[in-house]
Length: 275
Image (tube, rainbow, N blue to C red; front, side, top):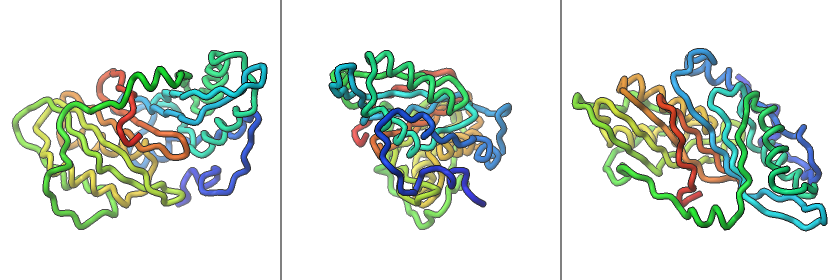
């Protein structure tokens, strides 16, 4: 079956366009991947957001002087479309030789174009370098499971049957830096950190690590990997609350950070050390 992104710029040679060109944005419907997971727009068992951070945002002032900044974009998890990442990058590059009055004007253009592509309101912040630098690098709370000893032999597909839990109810946050999946179009690796924050039957930490590693050769976009993890944990734990959050390493100046939760939350969007 052809992937919905096959007609996008992903994996193809693309001309660099340096003048504003919103037509470069390429939407990909979430419907196909939701259907693979047994979901529809009306049956999503989570709330959430996809945080995108752009480290290569630039434009010109009215006098022609370049400006550089960092862009932060929050796309609702229930938006009809995701935005294909290479088209996103090409679109952002098209601002490079375009003049704007100020950062607020850039924010307004970005919010309008990205919301139109996603099919839902996209929140945009254009941030100065000093502001972001002052935040520093975030350290995750909770417990890292990466030092646990496990035996691994199968990396082809996610294996939810590896997951185990106990009977006692706990509230804890577990995370692993060993998340890796592959782009479904180009086959290139996507590296990330997975965070699981829940209240419910105790999740066996070693089984979670083995499950995370089983994604290593799996081909899917960041958003769908996180949704798959959320659903697999929800089925096993039937938790009182569950949040699954991934912080992916940037490619092409963009990092993508999907969060899915049973709660209304505002995820911490500060970058991790590899971002």
